[in-house]
Figure 1 (cartoon, rainbow, N blue to C red):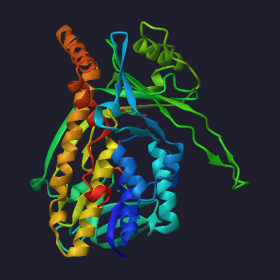
Figure 2: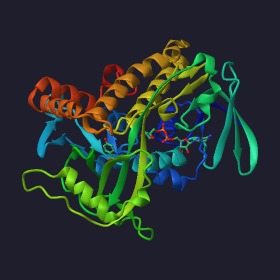
Figure 3: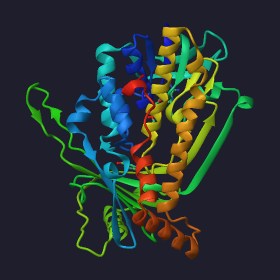
Length: 416
Ligand code: APR
Ligand code: PHB
């Protein structure tokens, strides 16, 4: 098999890249080790920066997002039993975010790719990227029990943190920057409407808690194409900071609700609604950057190159920034013959990546309680939150980073 761009991984990064290349008339093949239903069910954060929503729209993948996604103009910070709302449009000149689950982004992109894109092979596991430093890189992969080779002009590793693409960059040329955290997030999905209409980020002496949500999903009834039945209704997504290595099974549903209630408690009459918990899992927290993000004709994008802790929901948005940068650079190379944007790929992406690393780290430090935190550090945390609540400059800094920095498209086009 032969293609121009071999893409490893059908997460948001690989799927969006395939769509962007299809739109640009560049052929690509996507290899995904898991099956379709696994990819469509994997729970991840669901906050799209303004720039991410603009890119999906411009790529022709925003139709259902515009119908079902929720525009959010702010978040609430909760600390010391008090509430402070951060008003995004007022602080950023009109920017907002969209709440739309990553599972839905993936479903939309998979449907488009299967309808009009190039090959997307599920249960096709890349085993290794070979000859990355030459003009003819190859992906060795296994599909339907057979080993095969995909000959490419370029390879993009969109294969997540545990993928194989990164391993093709010689260790002597790479530098890794990493930080782990002594806590993780216990996340639940619950069949109950969210108790607040915007996200609530709560700092508490017992640890961090987050109230989020999934928009109602409209599914078509299998026998009647025309009739849309709202099979699933509004769902709450909630998280609790828990010690690193916690087994989600050790928390009963009642214990989870009791703990959420304690951490969200306010002095006013706000109440947390409880409902049946349908999913429970623990996410570890990590900050990680692999430099450079390119070696020869191998490019890394998304979680394959960097991880942020989920506080602030930057993971998906960073992946989108990377693949837009790659598609723009390759199109430029094909139109002008100049490799300058491809050569600048790693440096261009890393500028944005480090801003997101900084923001995600700061949000994590602002809101979580480290197991060894001293009383002095607790007071500093509260002072930082007070500062955000009382200074427009401090609040603007948070709002700008949360809604995301523009993708730098020329002439108002997010893809150019
Ligand atoms: N061969 C083929 N596919 C692979 C291989 C392999 N050897 N290894 C991993 N994959 C697939 C995984 O099964 C997964 O579907 O690559 C995909 C990587 O997808 P993600 O982990 O979702 O990473 P990415 O597309 O970069 O998206 C980043 O995901 O982790 C979240 O918060 C993060 O929102 C961010 C987003
Ligand atoms: C989520 O809805 O899953 C979510 C939202 C915001 C975050 C992290 C996760 O910061």
